[in-house]
Length: 401
Image (cartoon, rainbow, N blue to C red; front, side, top):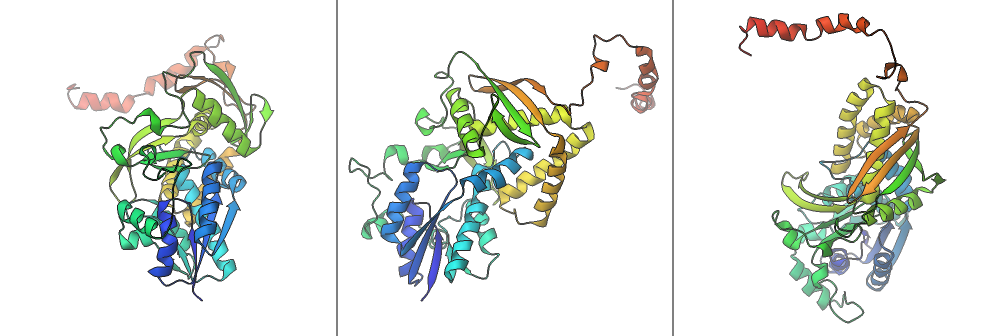
């Protein structure tokens, strides 16, 4: 008996994959696996109902805590960002893929499958993990080049329904014309009119964040404490990682914080218009970067910028199994040993602004304050030779600059 394990989201692509794996690829048993990394409860329930109807067996993996502690917190320590994108989907995909592999090995499957197309980055992120095994890797959407309309027709022929409670087709609903991917760290929106870089996204595409016009007039003060680079409390109250992120998403979203509309350079080499919502990510990354500037030395900060960028690019490409990724994490973890302290922020009208910070490891001394009387002439020797080569160069050029 040929058995395949499918990374299953519950959407059109992965639902159509189930009968395709039987009819086109000849698999006798299809196991659907959904990994919970903070998707909406309604989406997870729909995935379960649909998978239990379509597949031979269904597995739901609760990976929320793992996602926070093994993915999001390392991302915060690395100030993870790719061209302004906070790497929500990119960080989740390898984790999801690893759990799908675990199910496949446990079930003695012959193959692994995903519903990614040949146009995006997710195919690379799944493939990179899937191909660490000897199992066959199948990507029906990529291999058959099906259009959305062809998928809908195929789904209808096989009794795959996406109806809402009012009987209308959920997948064809005008409010579902966007392609949305969501986990607790970020929500991405793309497709349809958003493919036009000049098109201004309507408010209906946003779910987590209020518009600037609707955000409260009064600012809100926020206090976030870190231990070894990891956020541990909000406003003095210690929080579990999942609860902390959910709280900050709610608080930040209310103030319109965490919207990104960008042109993104995909791994395949072309540009794509992407829209993201990420209130908690915006707040935590802003606070963490500021605390690092108080604590780390100038040399550490300069070098860590290079490390953080390399770290983020590997995550974006889905190459978290690369030996370099482990080496970068080792350096980052070393720098975070002293990143303990509290950051104070003011949230207002789409902006999370740091207004104060403190740490027992601060490399700030009041001895150099403007209010402290010290003998300042000791700096004259340094000032005398500062810019010496630049002045000489200007003289040799004949004062033309």
